[in-house]
Length: 300
Image 1 (cartoon, rainbow, N blue to C red):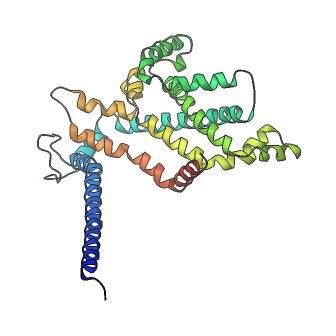
Image 2: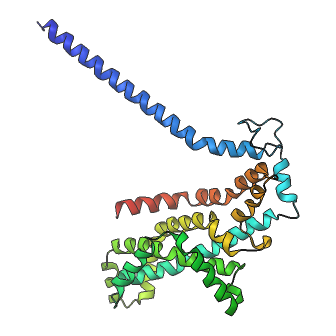
């Protein structure tokens, strides 16, 4: 016969473990709900403000009263503040800078990974050193440099998208080269050697063999560059002067810059529409993003 004391102790232990398990599940659910609310609430607040015709945060509610599309009509019908032009400027500048950054950094990463030349290690260390200092420290130098370049080549001067793209291209090179170089190093060199035995050149090896393997990682780097450039405000605000050349982030700031004429509803409507390009990019390339992140995690 079983000992009653032993049976009672086992039952109490089982009850205690069951209670701890349920308590742990409840705590995890509470934390998850809090985090979801913390992440979703700002988005819901922006959506609510976009449909609030009062354009005031003082009377803002999560569910707006008398919701309308007045803020969106103001956004597209304004003759002073051309929102569609700002959106186009942002997409143009971001797309060109992302494509150029990918082209330059991929070739540079391939050279650093596959070739051995004098000063290679020092150049890599210098590029890594550039990332140590905050980019805000170089704003004055960038402004002065672009101003001087504009005196010689006006196409790359102040208030030009070409000059802004040039700055974005330089800022994205260091970290992207390091990321892509690390991924190139994980690809076996046997592929290169086998292709060279068959008479392939370095360019053929890069374009036909290595580039397809790099495609998921390139998509991840491209999206990171796209988001960083599309959401930039400081550099664009300093280098662009005229309203017609503003990017979206700089243009929307006008609606909140006035002391007594802040239009938060119009600003929220513009921010809501401004998030659409990034959402579209994520939806179109989501499979490539997952593949790139997975490969990067496994091959690190």
